[in-house]
Length: 157
Image 1 (cartoon, rainbow, N blue to C red):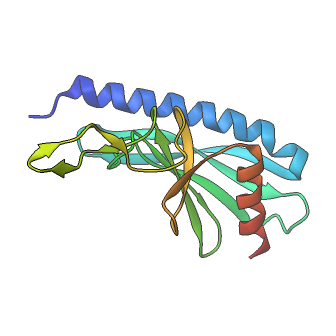
Image 2 (image 1 turned 60 degrees about the vertical axis):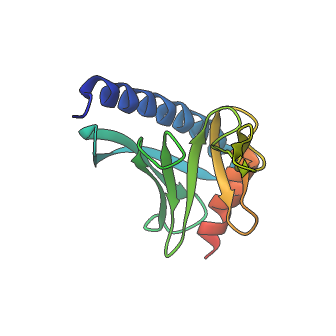
């Protein structure tokens, strides 16, 4: 049986993290030539149920207004992460995962004994949103420089 209170806590924590991230994005974008509008999406997650989550529409002040990039919430129940949001443009998207501490860990069994937990990813150095470089499985903390580089990549396609 699913504990409803745990689902509500996960949802509420995810929504707080999303809103805090969107607040940062709203601070970063104007200086780089982007306009922001908030939106809502309906998510339906196992163990949580249906709920509204914030989304964001990002438009370039230099490009036709009809082309936009979106930050779409994906969910609070993600394998290895308590949250995911995707930055989507035409034909490509970048996923941002929320990690706690040093992120997900693994334990290796040697001679029948499990060793101490070790981080699965390089680059996770505290709570926050990270973008995964898929080639080398390195997490990069999402700051203004990385976010605006990824935005520029989506608008240049």
